[in-house]
Length: 385
Image (tube, rainbow, N blue to C red):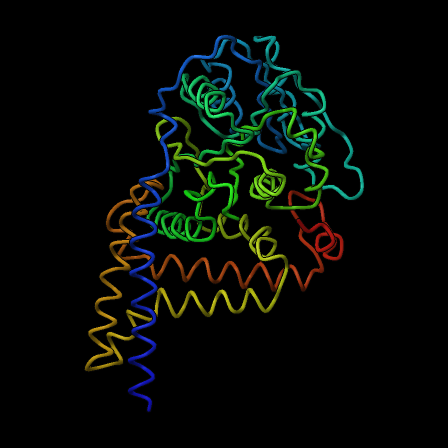
């Protein structure tokens, strides 16, 4: 009986990885690349408002913001929100603004109840934006000059309401690099971004680095107010648009925009702790099931090669081969390298730890604490979408 169970389990895992290898391989190839778009030039370029919030990010602004101002776009305004910073963020932004009038700096001193700091800052800035399109981005994103022009031309030609792009991730060491690669594969499996353009698909998503939205649609849906306490506001903004029948798409952003995702593995763990549990709607059972499933699917085939013999061993060997194919293919699109495929079980193990840590910390502290502000769990749970 145990031998039969091991064979059936190994066969199920093999079927999963066969489906993943096909889906991920075909899916990534269906997604467009922002850097290589070649769309018809609009008769009139619509005005675009680029918005980002910064809290205690004075060290990164000096390198990133000039790339935003260097965007080769004919009608651009940039709104930066200094969200209650305790470092020199405000001073850095004011100095840059003094050199380029297209940059408007808003200084927020207080956070109203019932809002996450970043979400409130973006909502506040969007209310003052004058563009027909709004690009929500982060304070540490580096842009290539043609990025916005290519994105707007495509969005106008396709009559999109939302266009998201996944940035190229760089600057990470070996351990962080394999975690980034694992995160990229899990991100793809969780969102299935290649399905987002299909109206009948429930797939949705967004990326904090590049969330381009049609301003009229964004305001009609309430802006960030429906997402006021969502740590995963970028993804849920895409869900908000998709739920209301908007035309959405996500594409690869490598070659057009880039970011140093986190400075270290420890920083990554701390950063993902705030939103991993939120992505599963703060459900303990779903989180535990997700971790167990990740162990079965990602570590299971390798462990099976050590434990099993006979048919189960051969099935696990085939599953490992397909796992490596899927992981290697995904690594090509998220800044990883081919050898990250062989370290995928380790990277997923770290991310499983993050999921458990996020659940435990959030439940233990009855909320999340981010950038010096605590947000109660009962309020976070109430803001579902």
